[in-house]
Figure (cartoon, rainbow, N blue to C red):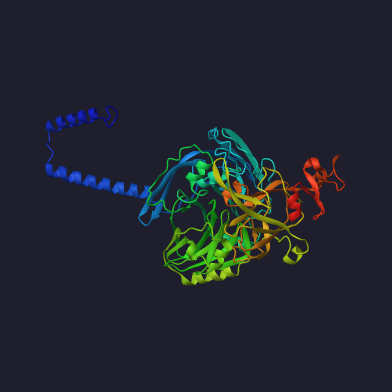
Length: 619
């Protein structure tokens, strides 16, 4: 027991002795009955105070909470300055219920600014953002000199601004930068004035370590705020309460490339996980909403709110169901991947909304009093056509999971709900101008882009599936295709993996869906997206026109373990002056293709391309 301080034995004994002597020598002895009454009153008062304190302390138990806002140190208009510290933090994940919260898991992991999710960054079109990233992680273990296209480099990181239309060059949204341990790096991006207002997110993108770091929780939200382009739409959105949720997967049980413990081992990560989890509860992955499992979202009856969801998981496909409720709610999809649909799309009780890794969706809602569960359906509840689209070995959970519980309270106004439905149905949203249409896309043969899966091979003591695109695994930062800024590209994206899903994600520019073949997908023709699921039994034709920015960028499968192990494709956007520099020179061939720059002539395409002979034949 302690011998010093307020709680020391010697002080308590001495104090009691003095108090005893004082009472024995008191001029007016204390009546025992009065003393008892005083003590009871004092205890009642203390209980009241403790109840109040406990209520204040626990008011967020079981309730959806939100990440901290990123601190902006700038004093200049339209300029934001944010600091990101990468370190090891201890994470506590609770399971929520009506009675509060119960601990699910505690573990140590890499985080931004000591928390997962990381801080939310808010921007407006035209803003310039400076991010100072300080990597405080220790040097990589000496035994982790793994080969390219494997899980590796556990303590090297960087930062990618998923879905944003910003420069990929230099200090911008450059996935080829490496933030080594114990180094500090500056990132600068400027949003065009016509940048979409929507929900985006950031996460590490170093090739080989992104699976490990994002699985552990390194991610955060970015909100590009609404601006007034149309007064009716702007007023409608300003009336909505915005609720932003980053969905992340907690997995300590299942899959060699999904279980965080297995990923750590394969990547040579020697950090201490310090995992505490009840083995009885560790039978399946859990989906967290802003760091909690199944939290409660309290809303007012007939309150109009915009639920903005981002799937920050590394592989899990979520089929969202807005139902199983005692409340009547009207629901509409307003946007996907940070871009408005041209008109709101009604969600009926029988409908599901798919949310693939990296994808985002905005759902505007109004509910009467009652409860509504937002759930992720199990694989058994997914339709036969969707399962055909996904493939037989997809990453849809085997168990139904409640992601959040919406609780509406207060008086109910059925007329208000009807007005909301009518108003939202008639709303017209501003969307980007399509690159072209399906008829025009047929004028030029599309570039064939194919996800390919090969046999398993042993690398660095671990067994890896061979992943690639168009016959090649990713080759460091070497571009495999070059395109001019302002010229429209048409790609047909497909997969030779009938059993495995591959979400297609493109950096820098959104694309427009102009055609597709195969089972039911998570998209419609005309949508502007940056991440879509490619049908296992078909293909999707997309078009995009590179705008504003030049430089090396990439597209890849957004199942992180596929991308980290080879399923990435680097391409380069150039302007007219760069085309001349590439194609002309002392070693240019008869077609003007310069070998020293890595270019050769492709006869089928009638133009210079990077020296990938088999790709020229495929095209």
